[in-house]
Image 1 (cartoon, rainbow, N blue to C red):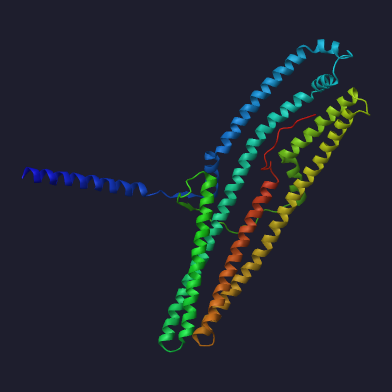
Image 2 (cartoon, rainbow, N blue to C red; image 1 turned 90 degrees about the horizontal axis):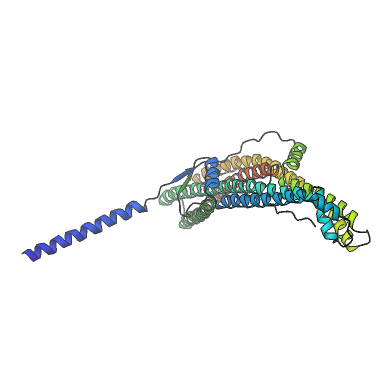
Length: 392
């Protein structure tokens, strides 16, 4: 008897453990849904993105290098009097004279300061890049969700049409072939819906990845993306703003000024017929040409974003009209179908055309918002990381 009780007790304990483990697994599997509007998504990414931490470290490294080089220049200034005494000794190397002249003209100090500033700009540029990527990913995800909604609407409508066709078939108003056509239309709508869902899952993973979330994290977007008319844009003012704000252009302009000073030093050291003189002369020409290219590139970026914005805005109105037209065409096709004047194929075509029109409208609204996003960032600091400058 005792042995039986012992076995029963052991079994009860075993089942208890299994039950507890099962309950625990259930509770762990439940995942909290995270809600985001556009600004919350940007804030989350800026807080959790590793690239920002790396840029912080780069700024610290640049600051240490800046302090070290400034101390070196201070020592140079302290021994400047001795250096001046040696400046015209014939045995002195031209390269050394060049370095001393660059120090005296403030070139070295300005180059050190510029590289330190580049490190600080790069942090802001990385923030810009993250913001842009998050905003675009948000729009991508909203667009994918809109496609799912449209595909679901199409599927529900196809099912409704099929149910209506079955009733007509039972009343002898529809042939078996026509009923099969409506059934096939449901199958095609189901395939489109499944494809839209897969597209949404892909965009959701991309969004989660950019924010630094687990790829399978469930999320909910609290902000719809619609067409909202932008503020009045003066194109020339926007171009001037971009030329004023762009960090790359600021860097290239300063490099040109420093290269001019270096060339001035080279003129005092090297004869015009020497290779070294030509090398510094070509270096100055390259710097000036690069400045012109950067200025043109910035202006082109602003103009292209502006054209895309206007084009997308105009096409939205066209797409809105197409949706209304397609809605009316479907309504008439359904009425004709019920009256025996339209075929199942006519109804299916009208439904597909309406969904295409709705997808086109959603795409144009998406294109408009992306163009507006591109235009906004085209007039700012930029989102392309800068490289440190090196002077010959």
